[in-house]
Image (cartoon, rainbow, N blue to C red; front, top):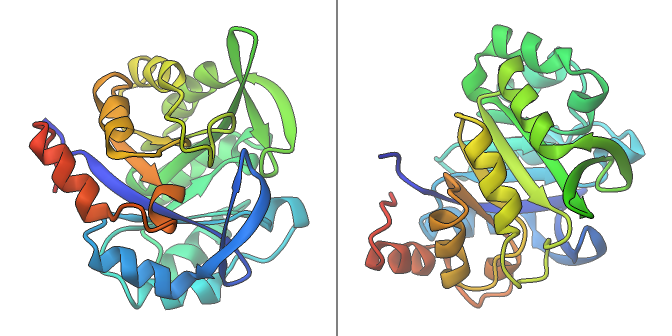
Length: 250
């Protein structure tokens, strides 16, 4: 049985961590490097660093922040935001990133997933899916949740696996920042549709909800933001709770 990973997420604008609700009304949380070091010391298994402005504003990738964060932590670092080309991936990996998360560029140019997985290895290519429910279906959104592509999120996850993605980061726009629990139906459907690991993101408000998405949603890893940014819980407290319920964590 694979070990369940607990992964803090730093949504970054410039060098500051921000957080909103349903991808909107972003508020400043703190310094990205300081928070990365804090979560590392609390026992995080990995860290995700996402530039929330990069794709929409066509900004340069935050190479400086990547370098500073990677120098302070000694766990896998996934970087997303504004990655469009194979050269972007190479640069991120050379600056200290271990994996890259690709959302908008993957939808606009699916070949980047297959090309990147061949050149760098599928283990470091993460397909990031920002999904929102409409009716009985979930659709993929691009540019930081601004545009509905009309692409079915579950079908896109399956295609992403075939293209060579090694992992899926599944973000529920509906639940993001609400602390009301995960979109279990979405996460379960994707988890049951692919064989690669699925990281559940969006909605964590307490350790019980984290447990629920692992057991019922069949998530392989859980992304945390608001629940730890607020100081209500630490990653170590959440991991200890999961251990007490029989979940295998690091």
